[in-house]
Image 1: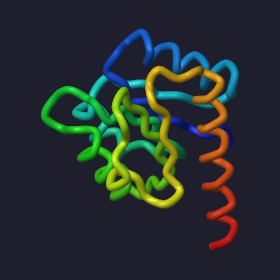
Image 2: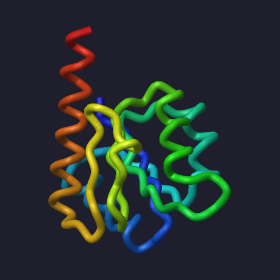
Image 3: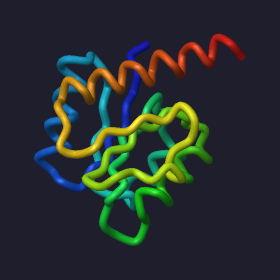
Image 4: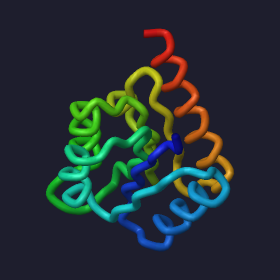
Length: 125
């Protein structure tokens, strides 16, 4: 089964580039959204294997708040992206992060590593 990745990034050109790289180079199914408000209902309706989450989202729901909702929905594989330093308090063991600007091959490698880690943890339990 093809892993399904949710990308949440407010800057449309970057969001579309990430979607394209993850779909075409990674072979993943990707849903890409621009804000946390649009993502929240999807977390209840759709099974995602990985979330790529911009911590600096505009709007009423911050990236950190959305990360808590993501974890509450049962998704433990989160790749955080941010233009600023990512606080250790935002990360849990096993989380990964990329600081903007980043190379698209780094995005792909981090996503693949997180999915492999998730698969190993699922087999071990």
